[in-house]
Picture 1 (tube, one colour):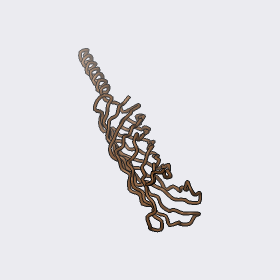
Picture 2 (cartoon, helix red, strand yellow):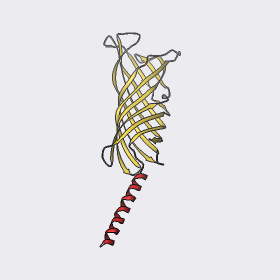
Picture 3 (cartoon, one colour):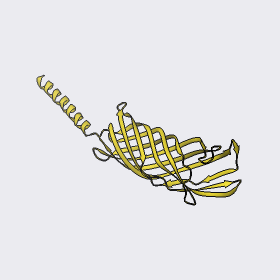
Picture 4 (cartoon, one colour):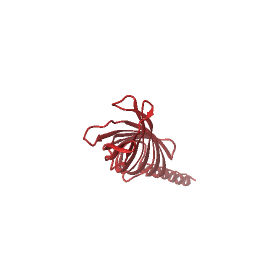
Length: 225
């Protein structure tokens, strides 16, 4: 009987020791993390409904998509919501702007002027919810707000009027630890900058509407602290 008790104690103790060791070797997604990534982005800005004193003035605009290879740094903080679900907050900052796209202005259907437009100062705040697939792999969804500023130039080299854009952003991603504190990630984000009424900088009676749709695909590496 005494031997059985000792054997049972030895087995239970071994199981606890093995479990604790296994847990210590499992990379944790909780806490502060920093990541950097690159990939491909595009935006489709739209300028429409030009009016003067509330009446259509015959102006229309045609804008190509801005594209580019972004460099994005992100900081996030994650907490465990359950054993398999996490909840966190993330901040993304684009270190580079998009490439310049062609923009054309028409008056009553006839070309009147042109220039270029790109997006800069792009940021995003998101709530992030993740699901653990295994000890080192997580898939996650993002929902938040995005901001950007247009950077426009006329064909004669002068600066055109710029606008601040803001709207909703959401995305999906996955990350997997490749070492105890380092992980690889991939994610895709969609951005919708809502319709906004603008006033011309040169004529307070002239207005227009702006909006933009965009997407960002990123791959990169991160570090967990």
